[in-house]
Length: 288
Image (cartoon, rainbow, N blue to C red; front, side):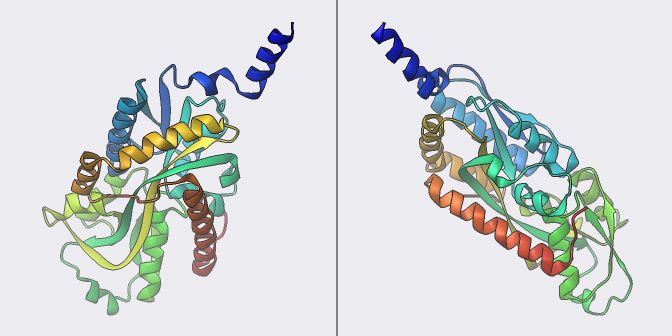
């Protein structure tokens, strides 16, 4: 009887999933559309994580709501170590710009900063950045989400040149850049990797005086077992040091992050959230 009691107590304190993890496929929700730079990086990361953990690891794209649909799906999932979030930095922006975000950073466990890449502003292929000094008309600019890195980077550019802008909403980055290429809009801020693809054929002009750091990171739902988080962190750190992973991301203009421990990443996220909140207040955006 005593042996049985101890066994039951053990599994109450340390759930079986935490002891045997992983023993079934792991789903990583990506709150953005398939096919963009972040998606390419996420899928390669999942492939390498699968090699480390010896179980299937797959990406499930859940775009919509500027990212909050996929983020909330992870927030509301069972914290059993089989559902995670791979999110860009709009994870932080949405909390401060959308009334119906329905989550905060405290609803998650930050696991690891995976990669960094920058957002730049791009314009028509026949307009240089210096031309904006003398432009007096209102500027049409793309936005793929209110308060998103795309939106805020463009607003910083407009503020620098004291320009007035009209936001043109888009459902996808590809749709927005196509309109920029065809000169239906004037400005569009996007990740460097995506702009680089268009710039190779001289469809656009990239302005590098204003940029914003974006990141892709892995989060777990709150209350996920520490044993799972620790095991996952070790696997991720090994992947980030793998030269093939570094070179793959470098080719698509993405830099592998150098944070190696969960505590450093947690502090980074707290600081990032604080800076984003201040930036939004500085620009004058209000929650919608």
